[in-house]
Amino acid sequence: MNKPNHPPAGVLGIGADAFLPPGVSAPEWSYRLGQVRQPTPPTLLGRCRAAMARLSAAVPHDWTANMLRSLRDRRDWRGAWYKRGASAIKYVLRSACMPVRHGRFLAFVHAHPQMVAYRQRDPRLLERHMHRYVNAHWHRRRRLQNLHQHYRFALANLPGGLFDLVYGLGHASLGGFIAKDGSLLTLCMRPPIFMGCEGELCLQLCDGNETPLYSIVFSVVGEHRPRLLIGCLQGPGGDSARDVVRELTRNLHGMRPKQLMLALVYAFARRYGIHDIVAVSNEAHPLRRTGRPVLSDYDAFWEEQHGTAIAGGWYALPASPHHKSEADVPSNHRSAFRRREALRLQAEQRVMNALGSLPVKQADPLVHGRLTAYKPMHEFRERSWAS
Image (cartoon, rainbow, N blue to C red):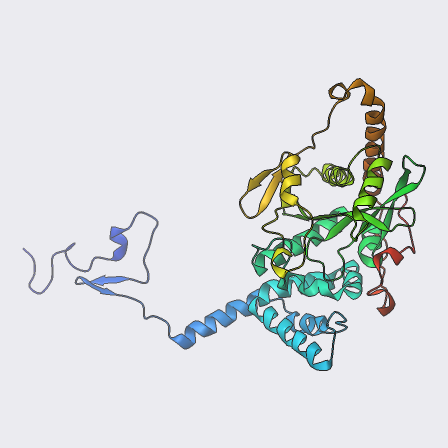
């Protein structure tokens, strides 16, 4: 029989581990006489201290120094002193809304001399993600993530000399080809225009003086599976734009200029093995809601290129462009078709040559001062990229 005042074994004093699967314990719970004792919840002050500790561990240790450095030489803040002050305050407040992510981006920029050179030429780089950018549906965190990923891709994949020319000087000549009328057409690679919001890399078709005629702007995002995002496809402006496009089409042996620009982007993607190519739609274009006119009908052109509308305001383009064969062309137009295809292949080869000329080591960073900060893009001809 049981002794007095001693409960039978296995009735009382059962630990919580007896009711859990093997290998699982519950140190925070204690079962005694059927009573459950829960841990004391932390106070508000304790939760705040824990959150601050996690934030301090996540923010780079040089966050303050990088933040102060990002306030210097901000020539993109223009106007009277109070307007520049208001721009600075808004920048600080927006940075405080995402201190960890923005701090990491600042650390990335200041850790690479080539990015420092580009930041000096275009200080708007540091807050491009705080404004409308590429896709109107993007949240600022998504904008910053894609901005960061593009420059990580560019530093890792673009030849060092080409990166310096494009982002350090603002212009890289990729070579040229002869048009139908004997004039020279050239290809250039440039960074986005000042306060640009449609992408981070620009391919341009120019005349012999390297004055832009057509431009296509895109970015490359993604870590393990890169994706190419097309944010702009723009032709000439002004009252004579139609005449310029008509004359340019004749000089390309009947090939539309925007068809050539898309082919150049496909050549870029092919060089790096990129199969996911998407293009922004009319509805998601960042300039649609600003009141500024966007003359191009992107949706119609993407659908013409066998693109499919997908979620998020994008058109998914085929992994490879659709080209007609000579058999698909009437016999009386085949000679023009062959000249047109030869010109397209020649232009694509210019891009491939520039991207394929990988140097043994990265070129020294090019740091230019105030005089080149807001120079027009067509005036940057200090060096050329041999094709």
